[in-house]
Image (cartoon, rainbow, N blue to C red; front, side):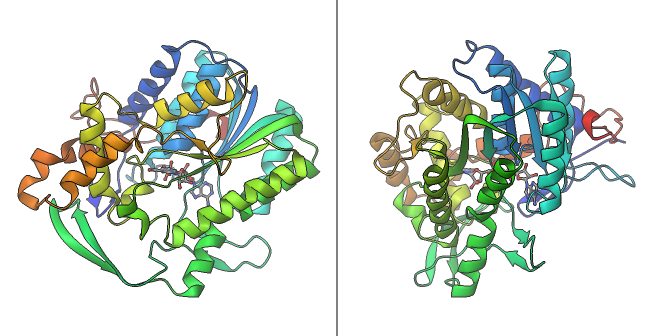
Length: 395
Ligand code: NAD
């Protein structure tokens, strides 16, 4: 079939297999263009490994440090003339490229929140891999089924203080409008913490430890976002921010149990991913930020960010550099004063008419399409293509 993008709000319901493969290959090429990583982990588990920051983590570990990787994700296979999801095609392309380079890669598709998935992964580590020395926890999910009670928790993106009104970019219609969001109830906040907080991260580490499949001195990292004040009401001070506080608390608990420096939270840059495009206000901020960072030669994508995390922090002889709250800050370039001053300088004045002049909305959109494998150079989008692509290790 000929595959074209079908956008519904902040999601694209189709994905292009060759395009996703080209997207993955571009990230692999970037990592290979850099020196081999120092002190790189050798057996890496990535939970949330098929898109965004998790996929970049898997690529950096494998192609930058020659690690064997286990990837867990929740993606859709192609069926009945429907394409697979982008993360499915990304993972198929990742495994093919890994096999070509003689790198071991095993993938698991299903619910990472379940006990069953944890046990399946543990069995594979026992039989095929050997003790894991790094766990990257990079899940972004709108819901979680409690593995013990079966209760379904839903995460919401809402402020926790009062009603919040802000400028917002309607990415579908390319309109600057005002968005008003009522604050979350205490129950909604609690459920968001259940989904996006650290409870499941802790369950993974405990399950792996109890099964005896963690190497001595193992490391684990999860990702957070902070950003500038203009996004705080919806992010840092909102329901998701509460969940991220729990994630940071979980890192401290893991460190109390396994030793200081075992668990880290890395604060990453705002980037276009499937998860971030669903957050109100953030797409406008990203469009303005991209323009400023590109002009200053500071722009990075997921792969550049995670390469910096592994090379400059984990690879440094003195270990990761931490802020006063014990976090790694690879959002340092985003948060530079001159960058934030430039973004703030246009925030109040940007209108629908000036979007193209003062923001990089074109870059935002291009990046969004690329997440689903569209707009990649060298791909013949007019050609018939088979949507069915196996992920070799799932066979
Ligand atoms: P993403 O949507 O690109 O990736 C989410 C991953 O989670 C995918 O691999 C998906 O398959 C997997 N997943 C979701 N539900 C699952 C389930 N039930 N079982 C198994 N796998 C499941 O998201 P992302 O933007 O890369 O976010 C990853 C992390 O990085 C999140 O913690 C996010 O808060 C953080 N972060 C994102 C940004 C950003 O701007 N995108 C910035 C800083 C930090």
